[in-house]
Amino acid sequence: MKLSTYIIFAVFSTSIFAAGTFEKGLNYKANNIQGTVTVNCPTETRIVNCYDSYLSPSSVSKFTYEGAQEVDKVKIEAIHEDGDSRDKSSRMKNGVSTKRINLWISTLFQRPLLDYGQNIVNYTFSNNGREVESAQLNVVVEQLPTRYCSWGTYRAFSDSQCQNTASICSDYFRRYNDCR
Image 1: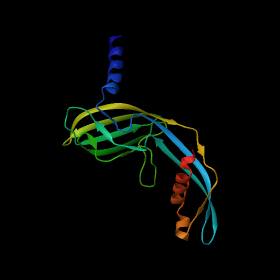
Image 2: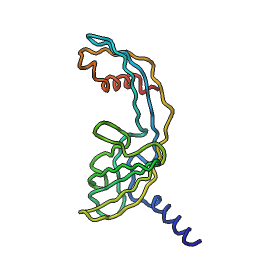
Image 3: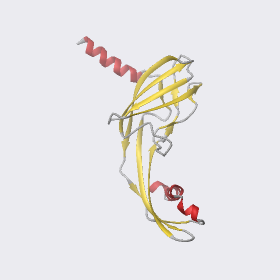
Image 4: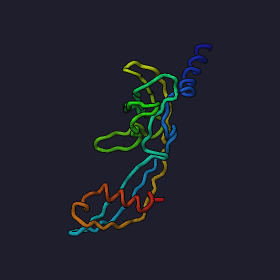
C-alpha cells in the first residue's frame, strides 16, 4: 500500500512541481477550417478547396524553465495517444528557449510536436551537455468541430500567383476571419 501511494505521489509531483512548461500553457484547442474558393486567373478559372488547422492559443510556443539551476538546452519528446512520438530541442537563454517550438504546423519540412488528445511530454534540461533536470508534462489538444467558410472568390493577376494554392488559401481564410 505504501509503495503504490509513493508511486502515485511521485507521478503527480513531477507534473505539479515541474520546472519546465510551454509559455502558452498545457491546454490547446485544435481549430480545423475548410472552404472553397473560385480563383479567377489570367488564362483560366480554378476552384480550390482549402483546409487548415491551427491551435488556440497558439500553434507555436517557447519553452520556459523556472528552476534554480543554470540551463543552456532543452530536449522535448511528446508521446501521442497512438504511441507515436516527436522530438524537438532548443538552446535556452535566461530560462526561455531561443526558438519557438512548433506544436502544430505540418509542412514538407517540419512536423508538429503535438497530436490530438493527450500528449505525454518528457523534457530534459541540460547545461554544457550535463543533464540538470528532467520531468514530464501532460499536454491536451482538444479537437473542435470543423468550421466552414462561405464560398469565396479570389483574383490572381499572374499564372504563377494562380498556381500558389497555399497563398490563395491563406488569403481566403484571412479574408473570412478563419471561418468565424
